[in-house]
Structure formats: C-alpha cells, structure tokens
Image (cartoon, rainbow, N blue to C red):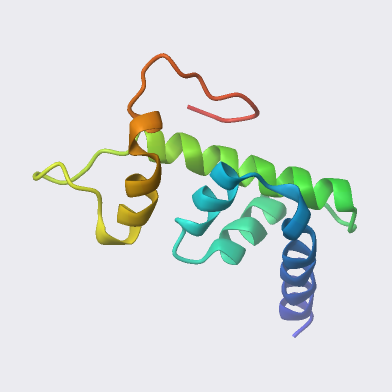
Length: 111
C-alpha cells in the first residue's frame, strides 16, 4: 500500500509541475507513450531520487521526453512504412522535422 501511495504522490507532483516546464516537442513526445505518467514514474524510479524536489521532477520529465524523442526519431515502422496507430498523431505533427537528418537532438538522450 505504501508503494502505491508513493507512486500516486510522485505522479501528482509530475502533473503539477509539468504545466510550466515542457515545450511542445517534449509534451508531444510524452503524450506518445500509452501511459505518460507511468513512463515518467519509471524514469523517476530508475534515477532513484528519494526525495521530492521541483528541479528533479522537471529534469526527470525533460530526460524522459528526450529519450522518447530519440526513440521516435529512430523508430522502425511496419512493412507498409506507416507509423503505428497510437503514434500517427505525433508523426503527423512532426514528421518533417523528424525526417531532417541535419538536426541533432540536444540534452541527455541515449542512442
């Protein structure tokens, strides 16, 4: 029960602080996850922060968004070359920029 209480508090904290901390790209990238809050919580637990800090919440959100953008940029589609249905909205919005090989992502993204 305590584990779920901690998870609920962290997810609520993400919601409170995300309103002011992400740009359109980062927001769209996080929304491309089937469960954005679960992805943020997983990222949070992977870094092993034991206390709440606004800066850490925002940096974790930016880091998760950056990783997702990198995944989306290097996503391999099915045989037809079409994005999966759950990602179609993201690619409709950003495909021209994602397809530009001259752009390099900045931040703490892993290949």
